[in-house]
Image (cartoon, rainbow, N blue to C red; front, side, top):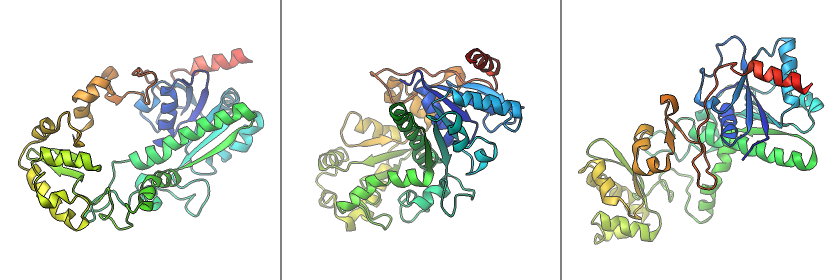
Length: 360
């Protein structure tokens, strides 16, 4: 889908290479500038480098810096994930790059953003989503907030917003001939994702108190422990799905359970469902709810997910060279995209330098 688009990625951490991987998965020619001499940030042949080409450069060396600039001249976008000011000190800031490539989309990936009191301070995924409000509803009210590591912040609020920003910038550049600077801050993206919940608040479904909202308080919107130590997820929000859930659980004649939206009953009904789910192993609940609209699904680890019927049928998880990883997403024309191999560090250095020579 992105054939003909070239992205230059300056080697960095987590969300920046993930955004570049996503663009490579979609067909862009992504050239990663890896640090010369090894000892880089990512492992050799990292999953995050799949589908990319690699060149090793020392950006503090004048000749290598000139090579980097020559690559940027040929590119639609650049991705960097350093603290504000680092690229400027290397002579590769937006002003410098736009001087020789006015249409360049300059993608900047940070946690706190390019401006603000925390812009120059360190942080990690958990810190960013804690500040943005996205961590607040992550756990029951009697437990410390906890989310799947890096998914809400680094990937959801960071990498994917950077990806969207770069694509929007490229579309604008092709219309106007002018480049742009994408300030993709994890605090901004993760806060923006909260708008779905804020919309619930407009309808009275969101409380600022944990455990009191439509999706984080009810007995029908949580996970339950099973007899074998596995877990199942339940989230039957709509009345018809909730009714099917009760029927499957043989609770459809229970007066208390019929009062789905009675908040005062939620803690007691949660405790009662907890006892019921503990009586059987996860497989029992899998079989009971198979094919139903009760909105119940087992909680699976990645390797369990890869072997499950639905995910296996869609070939979502693949293991090229024995390395488990998810296939590119989204899909186009219902086709599962093939995973392209990851390069070793510097694998395409000679090839890329030769291309630059040919262009001259």
